[in-house]
Image (cartoon, rainbow, N blue to C red; front, side):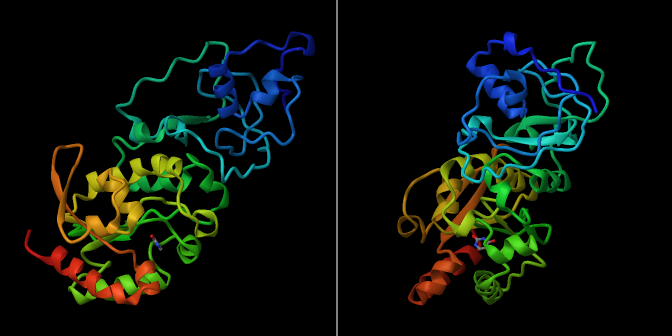
Length: 314
Ligand code: URA
C-alpha cells in the first residue's frame, strides 16, 4: 500500500474553484487539501462514487491515474444536484463510445499507469458513437446523478428490433428497479394490454424505455438535473433504434422529448414531429401514463383514442 501523496500540512496548495471541482470529482479534495478542515455535514455538490486511494496525485484538470487499493465506502448522493454540464459517466479507460472523441490530455511522464483509471466523461460525449450494447453498459455503470446511489438496477429498456414503436415512460418504479426491466409492475400490465389491443407487443415490435434510467427514491418526480443528466441516453437510443414512431407516456416524457412545458391535455390528440440529430423526423404521439390511468380509469377512453392515432398510417 502506498501512502497518498498529500502536501505537507504547512504547504496546503491553493486551488481555484475549478480545480476544487475537479478534485472533488476525482474524490481527492480531502486528500489534496488536507489539513484544511472539512465540515462534516457539508453536502456533496458532485456525484460521489467509491474513490480509489491515489498512488500519486493527478493535477486537478486531468483524468485520474492511479493504482487502486481498497475503495473507500460509497457515499450515496441521491440528492446531489450536479449541474447538467457536469453530468458524467465513469468508464474504465476510454470506452469504445469515445473512439472519435477529443484526445485525452497526455499524462505527465512521471506518472506510470498501473491500472485502468476511472475516466470522467460527460454523458453526451460518451454516448455519441456507442452501439446499443455499449450504451447499455454505460447506463448500467452510470453515476452521472445521485440516483445511482439508491438503485438496485439501472433500467436500460427492452424490446424488439427493428423497432416500430418506441414507448417512452418516465422512470423505473420499485418492480422495475428490482428486475432491471421497464414497465413490469401494474402500470406495465396495463401497458401490455393497451399495446396488444392495437396488435403490438414488447417482444416483437415495440421497444420500451424511460427518460430516467434509475429509480427516484420513493417514486418521487425526477428532478430537472436528473432528466438533463439522463436524457442523452434516451436520445442515443432513439438514434440507434430509429423507431417508426414514438408513443410518449406522461408529462415528464412528453415535456422532455418535445422540449416544452405544456400539459398532457394540450399535447395529446395530435401528431408531433421530433427531429433527430441526423435530421430525421419521427412522429410523436402523447398519451397518459398508465399509472395515471390506473388512478383515473375514466381517462382510458382518451388513451384509447391516442393509441388509435398512433396506429394510424401517418
Ligand atoms: N413507470 C414508468 O414510467 N416506467 C416504468 O418503467 C415503470 C413505471
